[in-house]
Length: 101
Figure 1 (cartoon, helix red, strand yellow):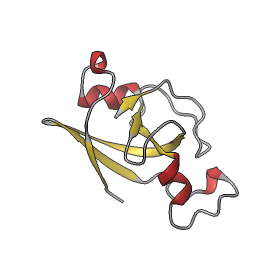
Figure 2 (cartoon, helix red, strand yellow; figure 1 turned 30 degrees about the vertical axis):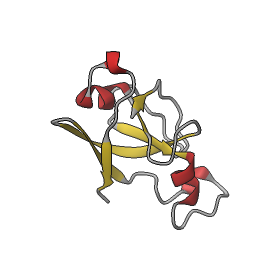
Figure 3 (cartoon, helix red, strand yellow; figure 1 turned 90 degrees about the horizontal axis):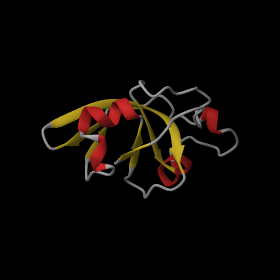
């Protein structure tokens, strides 16, 4: 997992640094069941919840964006969401995650 400077997400929602939100890999986003590929704002994955784990920390985040540089299981967090898991100095962390919804 890593973090990024959010803005207007692929789900059509403006994401702020303090939102508990995440971008999933383009691979997962584009192949999510029910997504037609026509309008990314209409992807059924938008708004789904994920809980990510790193060491003893965990954070639940909402899928609001698509990460073009991510590998299939990577997550790109808002700064606030990342900070709930680890110190910014780490930059990238080997976390695990599960779908909540």
